[in-house]
Amino acid sequence: MTAEKNRSTYNLDVAYVLARERLATVDIEQQCRHSSAHYQAQDSGAVVTIQYLNQPYRVTFPDIEVSPVDNTDRLPLREQILILHYLALAKGTPATNKLVTFRDLPGGVVYYPTFSKRTTDPLTRHFGKEPALLVRATERLEARKVDLGDTAVVIDAFSHVPITMVLWQGDEEFAPQLNLLFDANITDYLETEDVTVLCEIITWKLVRHSSEV
Image (cartoon, rainbow, N blue to C red):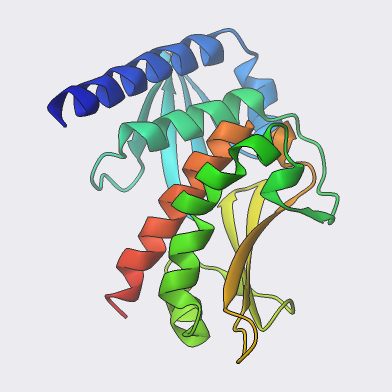
């Protein structure tokens, strides 16, 4: 277990270094426009403020460090990486208002078993028979209800990355099922692997929040 944890930590450290290097090569003012982040020039460089799960975070340049605006606990490294990836990749394309599944993303069919194991399966187990609990758990992320399935909410992970959670409660014939849907433009903001990580993070935040409501 220790060796596996060490490998995981090493991989995150490498991914963090690569994400910072990638972001250092882009036009950050342009990327702020594309990602709806706020750019502020300073004598020593710049500060970018970005919304992630409805909380503001700052990315300082040129050192490229991520920190919460309200000085709360530091984000886990993989969430910092997500912010850097979104900021570097964002293309500024408008929403299509067409919803797609994870299987529709590049490589999504191949990686769907891993995705479902980490996200939709635990969400269905936890909230499948308790739609009201799902709604209450998502309130902390400022989700909004939409008219899909039996119960559905939209969480704005980033300004241009809405994630739609649709719950079918099932009946005597069919088991409950909770699915995650994305705007068809999501790959203009995040890569498929990032989508998996993001949805897994949201999944376990909601599970934790549900025990507090």
